[in-house]
Image (cartoon, rainbow, N blue to C red; front, top):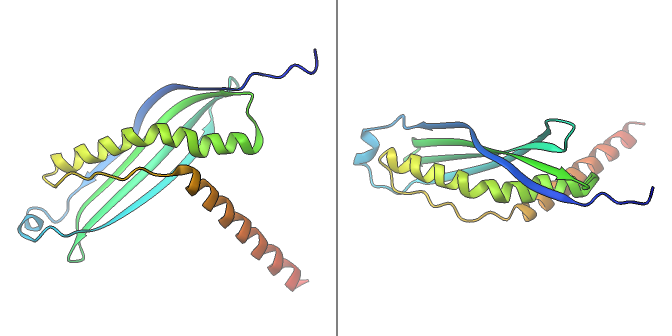
Length: 159
């Protein structure tokens, strides 16, 4: 009986907007300019265990900044969150699920909120391309491994 494995489970419990913001500091003058914005997209995820029943909150933060002639046309920030029940998954596999599967579920909700806010703000739709969270996760792992390697080299050089 000690060899019994807990069945792996991943279930979405709830999806909700944690924070949302739209700013358009240059209106109405920005509407007179030719609309060829420089757009910057910033994505971030974080997760926290919220109870002892295997529930985790995952927050996907998306910030879009659109500038026309170095002037901010609009700034949109959305924190799309969800509660996910995860059982039988631990260690690196748990970090991977929290960093890839959960954000994949949350992203379409964040994308729709951003598009809606921009249109309601008088701007053309913002249609964010799909995001490969697996690739972003692998990139983050590689960066932290490189930083850990640099830190280890720095420590050995000082001894």
